[in-house]
Image 1 (spheres, rainbow, N blue to C red):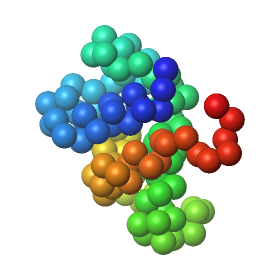
Image 2 (image 1 turned 180 degrees about the horizontal axis):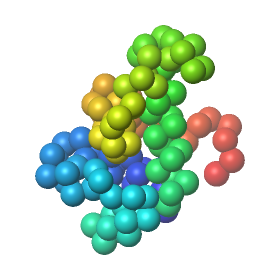
Image 3 (image 1 turned 45 degrees about the vertical axis):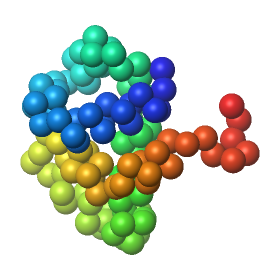
Image 4 (image 1 turned 90 degrees about the vertical axis):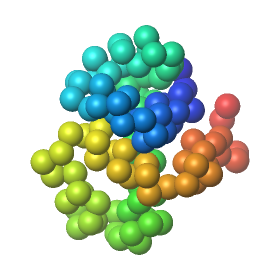
Amino acid sequence: MSLQSALKFFATARDDAAFLARYEQRNLSQLLFHAKNDGFDFSAWDLAEVAGRIEASIILTKDRDPFDGRARLWRQMWGRWHLGYLIDQVRRHSDGELAALVAPREGAAA
C-alpha cells in the first residue's frame, strides 16, 4: 500500500469527472473496496495522510494562513462531500507539487 497510489487515486478523480462521480458519495469502506478493484493499492491511513499533506500545503503555502481553526480552507469544506472538497484542493497543485508531497523525505526512515 502506498502514498503514491493514494495520490494517483486523487489525480485520477481530478482528471476524470465520471470517476469522481462514481466515488464521491461512497463512505470510506466502500471507497477502499472499489478503489482496490480499480487497481489502486492504498490504506485508509495512506488516503488520510495524503489528504492531510494536501490540506497543509494549501493552508501554509498557497493561502499562507495560520494552521489553526481560522484557516480559510476549512470553510470551503462545509456542506460538501469530503472527496469533492479534497479534489478541489488537488486542482490547486501542479503535478510536480503533488509528487513532492509524497516524495520520501530526506533523512526519513525507509
